[in-house]
Image 1 (cartoon, rainbow, N blue to C red):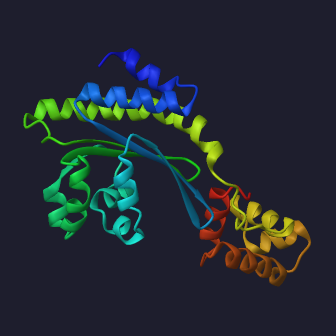
Image 2: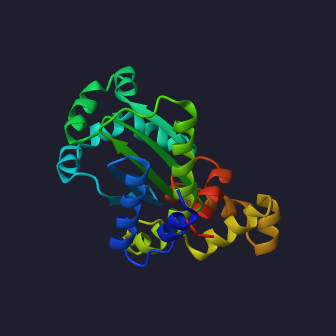
Amino acid sequence: MNYQDYLEASAAQDIETFERRLVSFAQELGFGIISGSLVVEQGLKSHFINFGNTPQGFVEAHKNLDSSLRDPVLMRLKRLSMPFAYDQAMYAEAGAGDLWDLQAPFGYHAGIAMALHLPEGRHFLLGVDSDRPLPKDDSALTRVMADLQLLAAHAQGAALKLLLPQVPEDEDRPKLTPREAEILKWSMQGKSTWDIARILGLSEHTVNFHVRNASAKLQTSSRTQTVARAIALGLI
């Protein structure tokens, strides 16, 4: 691939151009299908904004939530950051052969997928699929994986710019009171309950009361988890 191909993917100014350039890139690699998602975690929810040329029939057939939870490719994408190859054998080993049978008629025979796990609860998923087997030569397969990884690194910026505005505002986002946020900020700096009580002119009982309230809102079980969750959600 030419470096200009990567730059063009990252420079797309609209979604249609972005998808068209990704499809062209995938075809140059020998893959007929390229698909991906920008995943944005908001509170206790995750929003998926999909892109690519995934066959519409497959989209309709694969909407079942249980199928997504059992899909071995999606399971790997949650925990891996490097490209990996997959085919029917992976689905069979995971006891999900029925899912492979569901997608095979739409041109899915073998593929490569990867995920970039970004700050602020954002994830960029990208994969290519073919109706033919993957290259058997290790060097050729490694080259394709490297191309996909470099494409993802360039394309994620354009995806954030073009797709992030489509993420709805989270109406269920937890809200901290000013006092709860203030106490968690002091906790973030390593201050103890006694320290915070002295700084804010409160009793230790009152400080702990606000921390418990914040923990309940953020569904955490310790002060450390509460502070980490509040930071991740941009609440402090």
